[in-house]
Length: 429
Image (cartoon, rainbow, N blue to C red):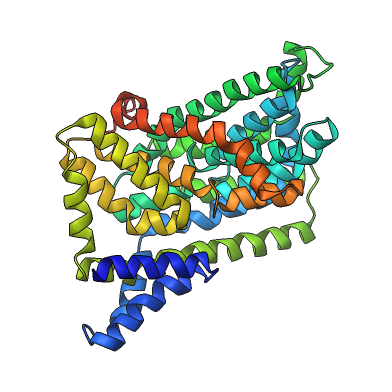
């Protein structure tokens, strides 16, 4: 009963708009003050323990890389390349929206950054081309999930910290699911575009045009190759690779493309470290909250409940996906990854699943929930850029959300989707 009351209060406070980090710290503090279950010094101790993990220092570098890319108009080059690849396909701008999210995902690792950066470029252009504002916002919000799945992924680093899993293995395992998400969204785009007779580019597909656009974006495309290749290949740690790619983004913007000024640099550094601080506050705050859940027995109860369905693999997969998805809808994805993610990984490992597969199911599921109404940050971001009604955007997102849920279900039932590439690269789990 105490566990249910605690989680109810948490969800209600978040729905009322209370900051997630503040809420996660407040509840265990109040509990200790009322019950005297532990000394108050436990709160800062648990907060420090939650962030005492070296790979987490890669997060500011990923944030900085994304900000520098935006300031250097590198994203514009990725949009142009995506449009050249799509060619005269029906609904070409909607397809390019998804494709540029896939490119951008390989450089930033953040759903919010993907939605805001890609959306600010593609949504106005889509509206001018005759796309409904709600559809433009919806496809931008849904495609932003790719930003947290295709490596580098901030959520993967956070969960690797909480569950003691190799970051490189998670990065390798996230590549195929991320590509599948993009492909699935583009298939749905095609049917919707044909049904509604959406625009198609006047410029036909041309290998030469793609090559020219690729050359102009080559330095931008170098960033994910260096970052992911270094981490997955074991050449560098995730922190070293993150620092290297931030330097590459800075040098490219200042001296190659020459589209970034020192004033832009200052703004990029400020925004990157402000956003990083927000993530670290949530990670730290989740430490004492996780302690409280463990003290109340909520973690054990959750494990027992989920393990009760393992006698039927299909039923277990369905219950697990629904649970992850619904939780992702009402709580911040970072908080979910830290507090609930390790529990789900533990349950799936006990049920016979590899830990890498379990972790990726958590990441994908929570990210899908995080872009879904009523509290999806990317959902609000896309609607705000498009100036569209929230309920209209929610309706536009529905076919994509249903398809992504089905894909999440397959990730549980078909281990090879997540485990084939890590196996080829020599990771075990």
